[in-house]
Image 1 (cartoon, one colour):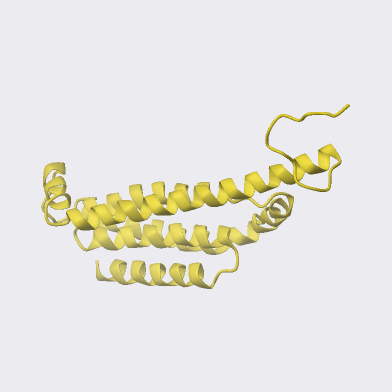
Image 2 (image 1 turned 90 degrees about the vertical axis):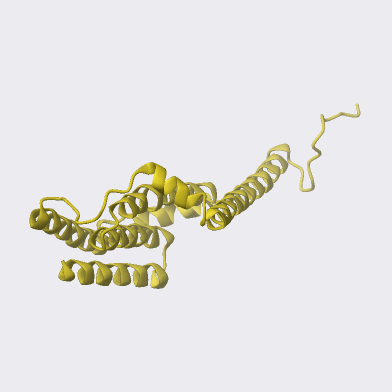
Length: 189
């Protein structure tokens, strides 16, 4: 089991370095998913299967969907579409695919080694709830406020860009070079 811990840790470090040093946001998201999955395997090997499941469900699942949603909201138009075609070439999938294949092989090794059972005590949902909303209540609430602030900021940025784009489009369609009024138009004549 020691080798699985060190291999997962190495994969997590390598994937996280690729997140930090990557030049495109799409590549960074793929490597971040691999990094979060590697951390989940570290949790499982250390005897915390519930924390591993939460890592996969919450971070590698829900939070990454939120990141992709924010990227879609901040879409920059036709220039971004051309960049996205360049980002989605098959070569960009090689690194994350290799790291994910290593994690899968490691997970299969863990399940073959002990039959998929963990030597830890089973923790039920009541005990987790008492821990989260007992001594760790402040941490849970701060994390939720941080996520809410990020979502509100992303919505504001996306809304602001969209509104400016609509005004410019209205000015071009009406043939005016200036500002377009928000109210109903009145013609003098």
